[in-house]
Image (tube, rainbow, N blue to C red; front, side, top):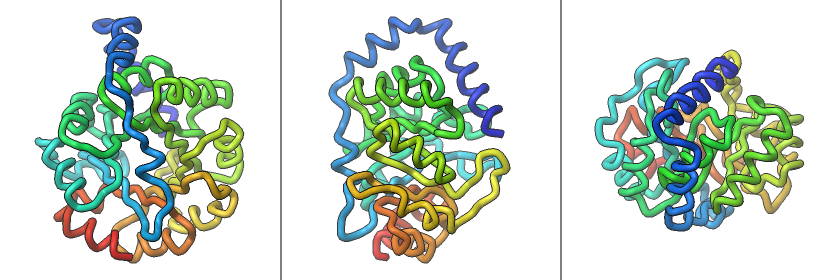
Length: 256
């Protein structure tokens, strides 16, 4: 599944490149105002922080929410206390677009993450051109030289990489490239099964000074508390927010 998603995302980017050249998207990326400081926004604090996700669908659950106005949902997330907003821009299985990201960036004053299956410099430049402050890099999807080069490009553009891991070896690979924001995704991206205890088993491998993000398997405040007690600085939440009253749900999650 992960290989299929990555290949599809890269193919779609290459299709866009036919109408918007590398030079054009690079110029647009460099013309953007400076990215927001995502590390400051997500820095460890006395209470857990939330990255709230805009997500219409997923391969495991199918359609979740129509989300006809991503900007309005982003405004609700910010009003509810989210520290950053994740926007799924993958179109084939998650039904997202880069236009969603641009709308959210125009509406929000907090950092915005491009969550997609990133494998090329063109996609990183697209993210900055659309206003992203953060870009997701999935360790399992990339060889180490590619992971390093994309991470370096993200930094050069003033953004922050959220480097996603699923095992101890992947955490080590993330740390080897100097990742300052490391996520542990409870969802296996090959089988899409969930392991809510995976974060807790890997958290101690992530040193102080690196922000720890727990991803997936969050339905209730108890799930957030479970991650917080295991050492999460930040929890990324999608489905639970798009299928509920986001402000009320955020209030419950941030109270743990």
